[in-house]
Image (cartoon, rainbow, N blue to C red; front, side):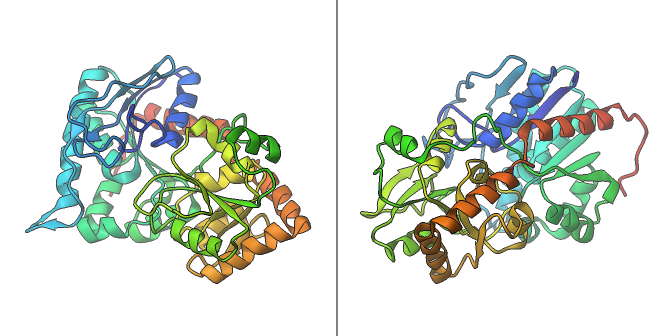
Length: 391
């Protein structure tokens, strides 16, 4: 690879939140290893919801591999909704775009392509930067839903913005189909690249050794949850199902307003990304009753660790896991979640079968292969000098 990329995102690690957006940072690292240069512009809100909560000065960049530079300029973010006749989301997008564009113009005198992560705000910034440098823009779409965008910005605005990208990376067929059918994206301009993970990090480990290293009970059945502590991900539904089985302990890796508490909670906090495989390995069953996903890294990681999984019977999850590698349940039905967990905890044969199937399923989600395939496409797009009509 010889591309000089600008990557824009509002979901990238900072010194105050080193585990925030790690799925993007590992992708960027793979691109840099391929031989190009990647400049990451990841603006941080002045009133940030990351820990620590208030950022008045630009944070120092995290240590990064050679050929990666990261900038964290500040922008003003407002809660979504409306301020009189104005969309608060739109005002936040405009501030983000201005901040990202100024930083990119200082960092990158000759970029080949601008790559935005998520349509708003990273994709919008990539469009502005691409316009300034007269280069192609590509957006990666991994959003669980576009409903909030439509409500705040309108359908026509989304169609118009998507039409301006030279290429669109979708993490699932569902997102691809939605873009074509709902937002009138031309099929040849969008490709599907499901999320991938690092198999040198996420791999089967001995359960007892993992528990010893983490100070967890050796013989107590334990379930694990990894994700934001928000309603969509379902930590409270997991907690409610846990209470129905007092013998079980729960490990919750994440952060957010719905933090599980109680005597059965063995751990409930963020964890260093490199430690997450040990937390998953320590559990008997991994549980994630999510309501909506694009392409869920946490599930792929749990599969790669060879753990039995209880998760949601929704289209995006079924496309990711298949029907045979996990136990699929109604994510809003706590009784169903509880029964599925109890069945796997108490039935060694059923649990072992799902562990084997999950591990086999995970082999199709290599981060290295994904990064290489996306890069090959970006090189095609950047070298295509022909004019193109987005309409």
